[in-house]
Image 1 (cartoon, rainbow, N blue to C red):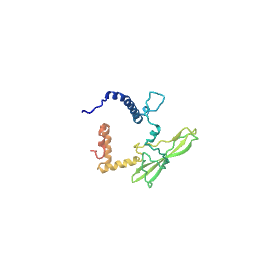
Image 2: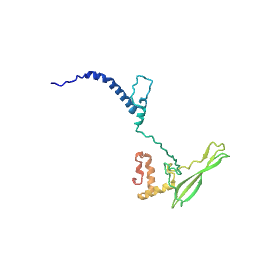
Image 3: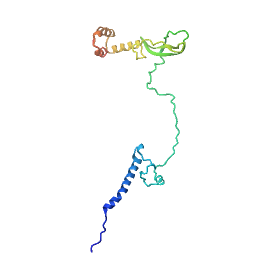
Image 4: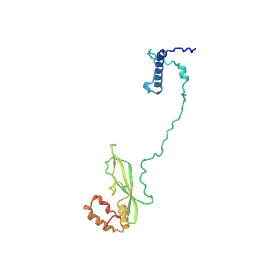
Length: 215
């Protein structure tokens, strides 16, 4: 005797399960938006739309499944004050204190009634045969009677504008010993340079350096 096999209508079961499947898909999409979506795309519960499907989760259950614990963090902000802030440029080295100083006053013409509010001091190394000393340029600073402008004399012209320390005596002394160390007569070198420099190519100016110079 053959066993009885119940007849199952799979088509009817499929059609019956479609509404439930659609509802579950919509709930899954909403949940993904809440977790992974952008802020403006996250799901916000709103009972005004009757067509909106509910997930069937109570608020107490959602709160109970939260994995985030709130903590109150307290801290004290302290502000440091630099007593000696670092500068981007360390500045030039000071000239030795034991060298003799020769003070040179460089004043500026100022109208009557101007008040001196300070002074600028610039030290530059100078040389005379057998002796190094320091020229100390003192330039008084004035404010005009109407308090609108500050007056100060310009620095005397330098042989090298960007080199504040050495004066012409030091530069001549250095050049002299460069020539002597290369066994070149300084007078002959200067005479030869002055003769040929008017027609000498500018890109070959290094040929005048003592170690490159040819008589």
